[in-house]
Length: 603
Image (cartoon, rainbow, N blue to C red; front, side, top):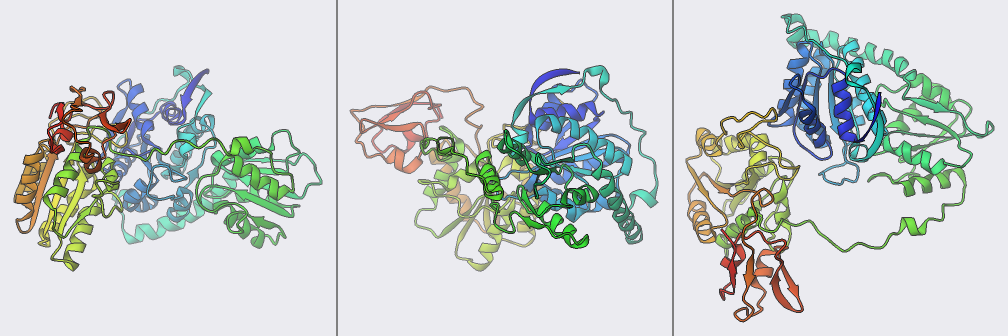
């Protein structure tokens, strides 16, 4: 054993490797992304690492490996579990041979997500065991336990770290190389009564699952990471129960105080019933502090009824703890002070830090998406048009002054939402914007649906040759894999033509005149047509010559600012200037200026 300073996600990857991991698949999504990237970084050649086209593909690939006796891990964020839920629900019935851990990183807040889903609730719905680490060290240790339980009970298991565990850092104890396990998969053994799902098989599997979960309730009651701590004062009739990072906040709030009875829940499903009942006996009141759903609170309320325990369970359902957003040290300290009848901590300075400058998220200086949106906006001037967006950097096209994202639901949805709007408003010119990575992940079926059902729409692919929002991961269109292989790029144009889109045009959005002309021409055609705006992500290209403003020619009309909203164009002493440290020389502003006052740059 030795000490290392690791991010939570890196610790999870290292723990999985120590458990004999053979295969890891996933789809990038904050806060989970670094787990797979760390696996790729530490890979000595014995591990297969894959960014799959979406979470469903990742889970199915991981399942196939687990059928062979391999230990596999699948990584995603909480909304990605929605995409993977179809195979997940069936896999819960089929089971696995090798250990299989499905890491789903939840995002309370939400900080970078559409929703605040709680994977603990999904665990109960899918009837799958769930592990919920509270620290970086526990994440490292617990991921190894997750593989062991998965293999012992022949079931996939869910592993649910949250943002503050995923992205927290700590000095932790890790195994030396010789202490790590190795796993040699047996290989796939044909058995249609095991691997082919039929109603009769599923019925028996359901019976077995229910029996297994009853057993796990007892097993998890003795699991060392589920911890019951006696009260400092034996006469205290109050208790606090928590989990995950919230338990860390609870411990911090109670430091130096006479703590009540405490219960930490590390396995929210199946719930450690016997341990929880032991915790409840003799108490009058219990406060449940958790993120995000009242999972523990509901379980304890049920157990009080089942075992006829007269204990008042308080938490989110009783409005003693906020029912949305992430907990903080300060919010938990306040909840505990109210519950215990203590004076609230005098921490005004800590609770109310100085206000930071307002920094709304914007497209980067030189981002080609800005040029793409602007070209479409200019081409559609005076026309009734709707612009459906999607998940990615380009969602920021909704901000003023572009104001070019009218809808955004989930990955790939914009292509089909456009079709629905077009059916109700046939006089509206309908556009769907989608990035290159999202196109491969979930928009291809929308394109097929549009062609098959004879929709009238323009599909706009914003191709910057990377998965920019989550950290520039490769995808099928980039020509490289996480195993370091250089492969043939999957052509978006060929895919579109292959599914029946007859008009597909590619143009550089930073050539504004050509881009506007292309949009005007293509949008007038009937049926499904596509425009591929192709230009590399501004973060990945070499900095060009920054543009400059000729102050003598500049009329201070501020058209460049009002039309584009580029963070590289600023006002200094009332004059429009270009921030040289931000400008990458895309040249779009020069094309927008009506007085030819901007020069330099490259396009």
